[in-house]
Length: 142
Image 1 (spheres, rainbow, N blue to C red):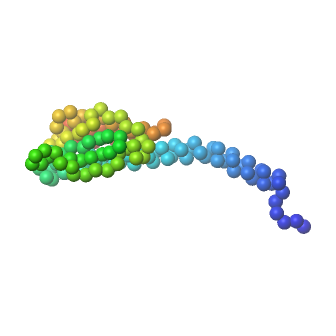
Image 2 (spheres, one colour):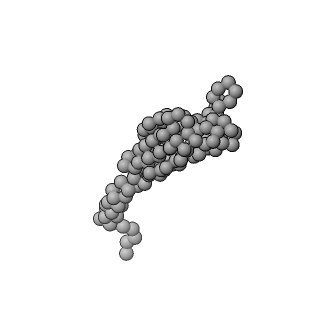
Image 3 (cartoon, rainbow, N blue to C red):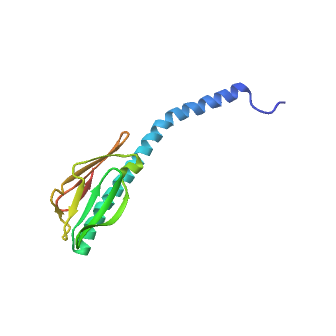
């Protein structure tokens, strides 16, 4: 009696592993794209909520700067805008950014000022997330 596997058995097992991998990789890639877009969308909606709440709580104006490489919140103070928070943008997740208005400003009442109606589209692979803000400060995710 011999112990071990024959070359034919090993070849069949390796072929099955290769076949299963070929079917699983596209699904895995879509899943990674989805996770990256969801993370970028979550960070953006959080930035908008934090800026709006900061404006209301501090009774001043706050703005969100939206760029591919960074998200930033500034508040209006004596002498102009000063930085409040900064963190990496969607580019850090390899997510593409399209935005209609790169700055969203909230007043002390939480209502958007100026051109606050903004649409942001985040894309990676086949996955897409669209975020819109209205003048009254509502954020909607599609």
